[in-house]
Image 1 (tube, rainbow, N blue to C red):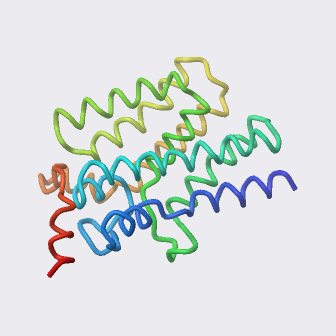
Image 2 (image 1 turned 60 degrees about the vertical axis):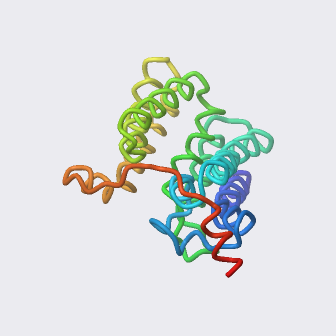
Length: 206
């Protein structure tokens, strides 16, 4: 019963549509109708700017953190911690309340590994930030960071279950970014630049 409870609660936590809620709170818009139509922080940054994007990033990370901590509270075994994390990522990526159309799971996954493997998280986030600053391709940074996680987890002597989880997570992130990778190869991927909330405020006044 503990496994079922952790899986269900973790999934429901992941289903919380942070991007949708922040978009409506900041500007009264449905972010699914703008930009890439994705609910993640990247589309929020391109559409509304850094502050809403940061809010979404932290909220999505919090879902992963909460799911793992909840699993720790209910049971505490390594398998249940991973189950809680996997369930949160699944809920974020395939939310039942939004027709199973959600984000790509990167920020929620980051929250999960922040609890499970904090040392790895620091290095991975640093690599992600450097790649974004140099190339301005968030997709490239996300895929590179995801692939790096299982390597660093193995080198840091984390339990094999964590390494396997990281490996599966990396495959999932690469899969979710397959269209971005195609655009990167053809030079059609969009570089990140901040949008402005003011454009929507002006539109609302008209």
